[in-house]
Image 1 (tube, rainbow, N blue to C red):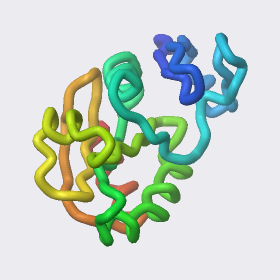
Image 2: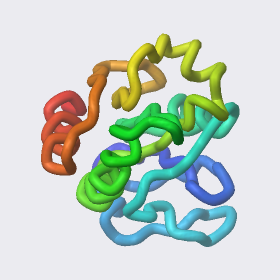
Image 3: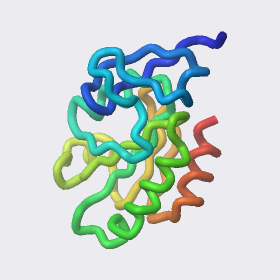
Length: 145
């Protein structure tokens, strides 16, 4: 049996501890009994963003976007497709930089869309510009190792 991993619930933000082998078994949250994986990106801001980045043992891929951005709107379906392929080995988040301007400033987001990959609370890779689902998955997998 491998070391347990911590997974933040997308519903109640409780931190769950699971055996790595159980990630693909459709686990549910120990607090709210909701599924831990949704196969779609989770919209977050503020404290929720911090908790998912800092408390998860899984790599976390973040799409920094804005509602007025044409390329962001074009990439949204591809990002959702990528989430269905990358979970449960990775959590995918979306941050609206208009609503969460503090996060855009904190992470020095100068171009949108921008993908950022986090591990252990730290950013490990960044990619500005829109991508298709295959490109998102390939880029995330390459940098998540």
